[in-house]
Image 1 (cartoon, one colour):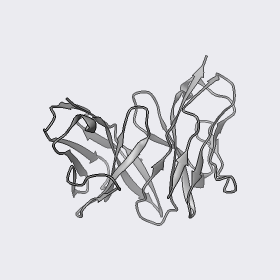
Image 2: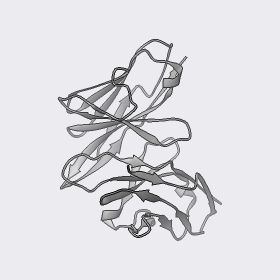
Image 3: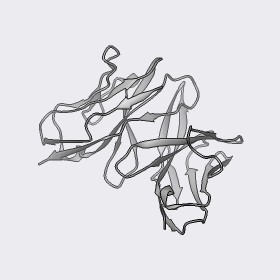
Length: 112
Length: 117
């Protein structure tokens, strides 16, 4: 069975400090990993996906298959980064809709 | 992206009544939609996959007779909570799946807060 683990429910950092939100997964095949973000009073939205290998709002995440991890990182946190972050997993893209399995989420608070 | 709406945004009902929640894809035709529920301070749990023109696929532990899903058109899926009870109180969220090449992305609705008295 597939599983996504986010060990930190709450994470607080000061503005300008580096931030890392941890995500580990278990999956028997080749997964695709995502980070979704939910700002206060807004809907869930895609932040980034590992196959894109891009930086969004200064965030990056690298898939480490050896450690089965997909940690989200940003070198200098901003107050507007305060939000709920969910790591999610789906089977590899195959041309059809895929189900997502979500982690429990990490509430990030960036302090002034 | 994709624009997804849900109606109503919140609803309060009495125990034993049925409640219908609508999920609409506003800017493209969605063959597949998903329904999730989220309890306070918990993650999203997939309830079912809704496919246009066919029966929904329910996750293990989700009662299909209690949570009726209808996906009669490419822009609308409905979730009806039948004979609602207080334990059904939750945040219900839908998403639509949009394909770009071989990779699909899910776009989420704003959610519906259901409170059963």
